[in-house]
Length: 255
Length: 293
Image 1 (cartoon, rainbow over the protein chains, first blue to last red):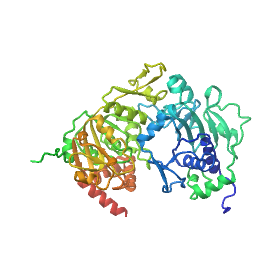
Image 2: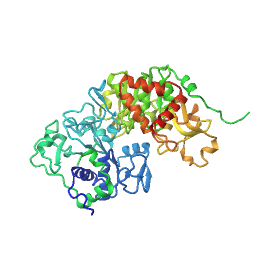
Image 3: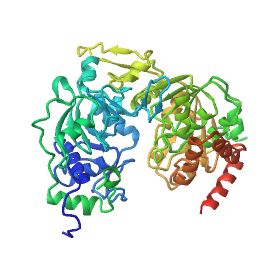
Image 4: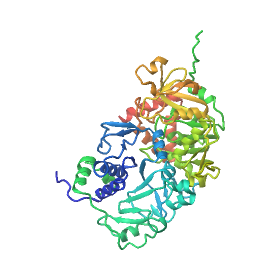
């Protein structure tokens, strides 16, 4: 070990938490959107789930596990957008998307802020979120946990939470699987009372009160919430010396 | 007289002259990738109005929105990737200048094109269920499976197009065309969903040349789907058109800055780059590139 970094940073904890979200997925297509999800997925591929299928984010399945934003080495398949849609419908996929808003019921918004007819702020559009959330496992990454992101009710439902899926009927509920929401402060899921968002763990150095303070809805009883695990020594080396020696992760979660 | 299939070469102006107010126009490519920008720029400068634009959108949607050409927009996203939010599109949405807006899930969009290409009124799928896509588009209905499962699915309506505009790397004069980059996107589907397809390409070559050093699987469009062929070198600029050229990030930043800036900023950008014809545009881009070097 070079010993350049001995104490895991918050970003490293987030990467390991993302990796944990993919560790039980088996041999499926892991689709991370953004830097930290990509880092966590590649970390999982090198440690807890070596069967994961990963891509270059464009059109190639990668046989190896290159560092973030490095050129592909060995290619093991072709995954243009049309085939991505095939895999979404087929279901062997776990996507980790961003979220401009997430609400108490685990609905996600990336479409627009304000009324849809004339938004205060137009965002990307719903992209694949409606289809992802009723077809394959979906997680979210939130680099800045705040009351602006975690709101009582999202302005526009792009990604469908479990309650909305159930209300839409068996066809919507059948494959709805909102798995984890990893943020810079903790890990959440939708297994709270009545399928609401709950705090699963809080990152070392963060208090549950701070998470509640940064969340626009009541997270319930937080007395027994454990700490998110630290990366192992092996993971720490992989993160800081193999996958992200340039420190792209610190642009999302400052050290 | 030759007995071969007909020569479909046209000019940009001839393509635009064949379009009419109120038409439904599908634009191929994906976000900031392989967009038929030369044709889009010509529409920007035309008198056409009240268009329905169907696009996985990038600057094509941004430009046409800025020019007030769009009466109805069908999209799943509008993004420039490295500039995530398209400023001209944002401005149009936030000022409410696009009268009718249809936001779909990006897979629904493909299914809608597929239904149109197969001359079906709809195709069923799961995407959309439970989301505000169905709330904001109450005209999109569900359909119950007639089989024992009884599942209620979205009946994704056909996205039938009057015209598709697509940009590929190479074609012959008849409209057989290859894509040479990483992804075909959905240009073949746009062509099959449309009454007429106008194809712009980096280079027109003879038919034999299309497969001389290129696998036949890269032939994405057959001439039977193509109405007109336009040779427009750098015609996808500033979007990605590999291997001919990558996205012009510097130019895209300049576009985004102007689009997101003041009216004067946009007027200056328009005057410099968009006021003339395609040749003038390419010359202005050349000068911009030399300045930035």
